Image (cartoon, rainbow, N blue to C red; front, side, top):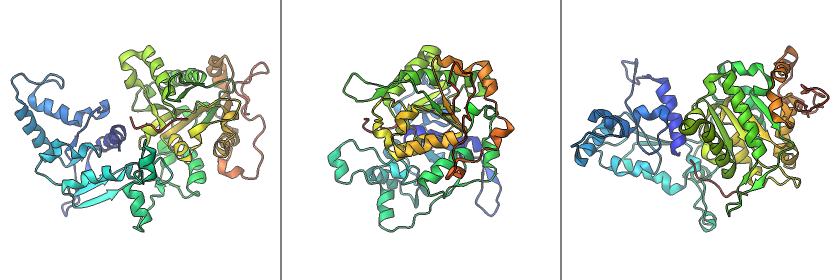
Amino acid sequence: MNNSSNDTVLHQVIEEGRVKRNTPRGGTYTPKIVRIGVRAHHSVMSVSLDHLVAQKLGSAIDKPKQGTTGTDVDSIRTSILDEAAIVFATLSFSGSPLLAKSNRGFDVVIIDEAAQAVEPATLIPLATRCKQVFLVNIYEPKQLPATVISTVAQDSGYGTSMFERLQKAGYPVNMLKTQYRMHPEIRSFPSKEFYEEALEDGSDIEAQTTRDWHKYRCFGPFCFFDIHEGKESQHPGATGSRVNLDEVEFVLLIYHRLVTMYPELKSSSQLAIISPYSYQVKALKDRFKEMFGAEADKVVDINTVDGFQGREKDVTIFSCVRANDKGEIGFLSNSHRMNVGITRAKSSVLVVGSAATLKSDPLWKNLVESAEKRNRLFKVSKPMDDFFSEDNLERMKVTEKDMEIPDALGFEDEAPPLAANYVGNDDNDFGDGGDGALAEED
């Protein structure tokens, strides 16, 4: 688990607050939590070790009290860790001197995203004198494995996780089939394509993930925006990464319209923009820094798909990038990467891409057709600003007829509804129906 995924789980634990006491007395209590490591998200800063040490010293987090020695700080850190009921850390940080100096052991070690870690890294926290270990990876092996750059190491089995090795050795693996994250309309496609329709929705999950913006078809739980006039370009350097500036501009339009109408989404804890390509991520980050300056990281979370595994947001915008006449989509064809990309959202996943290019791949073709069958495929033409005009938004309000459209899984043998997404006039077609380590890009 990387720092970002770690902070996602930590934020949920903080939000949950009190937990049940597993004793004869029963009741609840608020456990002391400490987060060790670097780059803590602002939403969990209150429990980061540096922040807690600064509080003990009675000064601001970046201005330690004058006259305090390193020994004093170390003893405070050790004291805080010894008092903590739960310690959050990445695998590598679990082997830091901070924990080594502590006299404590751990009753339980839980390793989340265990199938994304190489086996030597998984061994690090086991040196903390733990009594029990749980390896957790809810959707393994259908999501991204550990990233191993060296082909020699990969061929020698270095990329095999302990989770995978134990599974192959016959140790019992319990599949967690009930999902509590996604709106059912998001869940339906990955459940069918990757899990043989085995995923089940938790109780009331639809009510818990239905939002005000769902009153517009273009902001529904599952949408595909076909940027049919867009073109990709390749990084001029040696990285091989790609960018699609037309998608960048449309993603900005989606973001601006969403946060204008629903200001609660103007937060990096609520909305994320993800893309398989680091060059696209950089272009998006640059544009948001132009608009928001130093506050950009607080108004939106932008990352690669690989770097976003294990995380979730209320809304995610997925920029696919690939758009060419040859139908080449490179490593975007990796089903694990697709699965991660479309399952990060709780209420809405908005996919932005070239339908013609993506449909050259069978799996992406299924996704585009699924959006079309649900009346949630939108063809976007230039000028793209027109797509979110007031008149067009009014046409895209959900009607009773839209509510009657069955889930994509019900269209196996049926033709899709004709011209279902037409929201413009005859002069345009913008509504027609028709931190983590990066893998090598292509």
